[in-house]
Every structure is written in structure tokens, then in C-alpha cells.
Length: 346
Figure 1 (spheres, rainbow, N blue to C red):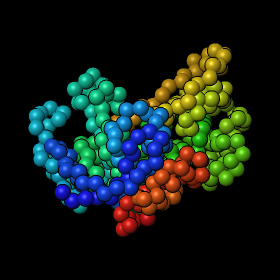
Figure 2: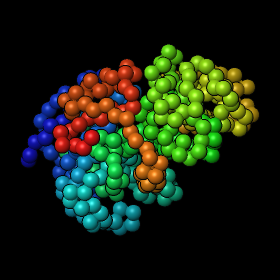
Figure 3: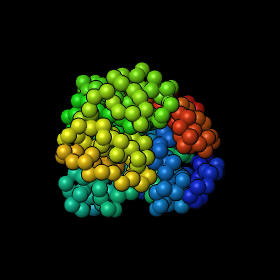
Figure 4: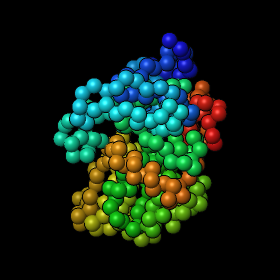
């Protein structure tokens, strides 16, 4: 069996180790993808740091995978939602592999189009090996064709920072004054989409992060300031991208009556106690879990129309630990992307 380069997680809080491992063999209904680039997501950091407690071990992380179809596995047996899908992607076609890698297809959530809540879902780079490697196998039903006009490195962050950010934006409803707490990979993409939709954007960064605030203004934010200061006018919604529970009371104080606070991360530190008065007035606090295939289809159609462009910082595959460290320390502007194939278009 041919070998491939990969970065392996052996256990929580351990650095990834480079290794030569066997290439995956695509199973029924799967495609084998030659990875060109893979985004580095805060969820990867939560997996590596042990915040998410049920990873497959050893594990190849990575769930913002851009690559080309190398081969297809045998047809999927059975019928219904799991019916064979022959010829879904052509060999050589460029596709994206996202966080949601599969769901049961038969539970109430799946039948209602809420497969993101399926209790038997599988996640790329968590319960299944991901894209910090030269090859990755994935269920073709959960992969996406990628829009033209996006080089590989720019396309990678769209597959989680963009997709789950888009779901969070949807959960904010039709709010015209919206705050983004944490202006990293997701927020810098979603700010562009929200401006295209005609919304006013208020960007909140760590106190003292003047560079981050200027970055937000360059991408269209109408106001940028510190997370410990109020916006110049009440917000109609706020999305919290930073995994800091203390931002929930801060966002509640910033939104007007009837406003919504959306917690967009998969993990967050504990939310401190807060007075009922800042929740009263029909304010809503809600979380966002994963993504659906419909989210992916909608956002990947919207991004080119909105002129969304990812700001990326590339790292070679072998520097994955450095990329994770930079993300952990808040040293990134935009999104980190691993260049797996040196031929990946920038």
C-alpha cells in the first residue's frame, strides 16, 4: 500500500508528529482526494488541546480540505438517503471536504434537514482522518464542488470558517446592526458577506489589538473597538467567534431589546453568571452546531457573488504545530492554511 506524509495526533495536548503512513482506501460511497491545501481551524486547536474529548486516536486532523478526486470507492449498498451515487465527482475534479463528514440519514434531525444535530454524525479530522496529509478519504455525499475563481489556499477557509460562520449569520436573522466578537478566520470572511447584504458591522477585538481593529476596518467594518467597550449604538445581533464565555454577558449588554446573541464556536469557556436584566426584553442567546449541506451549497454560491476573499497565512504541512501555536496565541491575521501540495494555487 503506498505511503503518504501526514501529521498525526497521538493524544490530547501532544504536538503533532510527522509520519509516513499508508494512504487511505476509499470505502463504499467514498472518494479518495489528493489534498492540495487544508485550513487550520480553531476546532483543530480544540481537538489538539483536549477541549473536545472524543477524537479518534491516533488522528490526522484537518477539516477544511481542498483537493482533487484521485479515485472512487465501490458503490454504496442500500437505498433511500444512503443510495449509491455513481459519478458524483469526476476523477481530477477539485472538491472541498468540510467538518460534517456524514450523518445517519434516518433520524428525525436528518429527515428534517437538520443533519448538523444528528446523534450519529461523523466529523472530518475528529472521528475520521482529515486533511493534514497528502490524501484523505471522504463520503462523497458530504463533499462540495468548489466555485471557480478561488485559488486553493483561499478556498480552504471557506469550508469551515466560512460555512459555519454563514450558519451563525443566518441565526442572527435579518439584523442590520451586527457585532462580531473576535475578528479572525470566520469574522473576516463573514464581514464581507454581511456588507454585501447591506448590514452594518461592528468588530470587537481583544483590548489593545489596534492591528486587528484596523484589519476589520479594511474589510468594511463600520466600527471597530475593544470587546470591553460598548458599540456606538445598540446592536440588533451579535456573533461570538472567540471561545471566551465572558463575552456572552458583554454581547447581551450590547444588543437592544429583541436582539440575538449567537455563540458560533464548538467550544467555549464557562459563561459567568449575569443579571437577568441584560437578558430580559426578549433577548435571545443561542448556539450554532456544525453545518448542513444546504449551508454549504448556499454559502459557496453566495461567496463569489459577494466578492468574498480569504486573507491567508500559508504554512508547509510539516509546520502544522507552528500554525496551531500562532492561532493559539492570536498571532494570525485572517486564516492559517497548510500547503500540502507545493503546486497548490495561491
